[in-house]
Image 1 (cartoon, chains in turn orange, blue):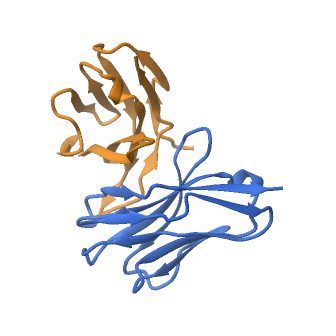
Image 2 (tube, helix red, strand yellow):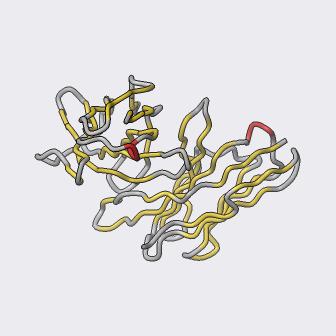
Length: 116
Length: 116
């Protein structure tokens, strides 16, 4: 049963600390998405990669957030320095783009981040 | 601009009855996709069903069906024979831009409570 995995599942940190979230996409998927979910804003797309190349990070605060895909099995989302307003659930999703169509995205369990 | 609207913040349904969750969308793209995801209290996002804008027939997946009315720009989710395990938040989402981007915009969600 192929699934997207995310670590850590929960993270509590203090303002100003660096936070790194990791995602392992489903094997064979070539597109990875990062979303953030908050009560106020709902689900927002932060960034996405295809074949490890960043395609769009317009939803991401550039000054403190960065996203990378060091290899096909690992995507990372980093916040440095973290702020209380970054408290949210961060989801990674993966999908397969082929034949000009992007297929369904499958979500990981999320990382619940609390910045004090 | 693209927009997804779910007008029902909360819904109740009796176990074993059918329920319809509303979703309307707005886009000027000729090609788009519509998705429904389920988010139980555990927090994961579970893919339920997909409808492409050019699909002639309404999508069905087990007890889930999507009532797609293109002229009205609506994509309602119908759950037949509700079960207690269907209690969750349900999100409607639209893939926008060209079909190979995969970018999703989400509605605010509808909380469904199934009563025994």
